[in-house]
Image: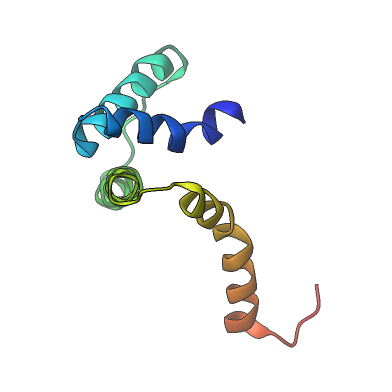
Length: 106
C-alpha cells in the first residue's frame, strides 16, 4: 500500500527536479518491469485476442500513466489529484448503479 500511495509524491519530486514527465513515467514503468520479470510467465495468446490485448495495454498502461504524470506536472499541489484518484472507484460504482438500474437494491 505504501508503494502504491507513494506514486504521486515521488512523481512530484522527480518532475520538480527538472525531469520531463514522460521520461519519469517511462523510467518508473521500466523499473517495475525489471522487478516483475522473474514472476512472469509469458504466453502468446490466440491471434483473435492479440489486437484487443495490445489496445487494452496501450490505453490502460501508457494512456493512464501519460496523463497521470502530465497532470502532476501541471499541478502545484497534488492532494486533489490523490483524493480524486481514490474516489474514482466509489464514483464508478455509484454511476454504474444509476445507469444500469437504480431500482435494484444490493
